[in-house]
Image 1 (cartoon, rainbow, N blue to C red):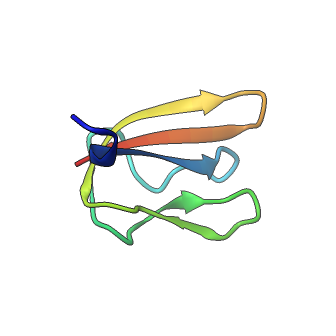
Image 2: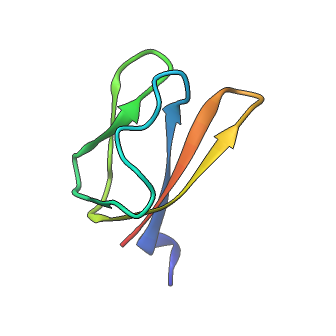
Length: 66
């Protein structure tokens, strides 16, 4: 698997993600909100493989793989 096959997307933990681990997502689908409350969109069609909490910045890192 190459780097082009996976992406990490960051969303605000306070609002939470709009998707779950294991869920298939489409390119352009809303995954959650940024800290300034703007929608965060999936850059690719794929599956959410992980959701990791960053306690220092109160953010969620969503790993999406094709």
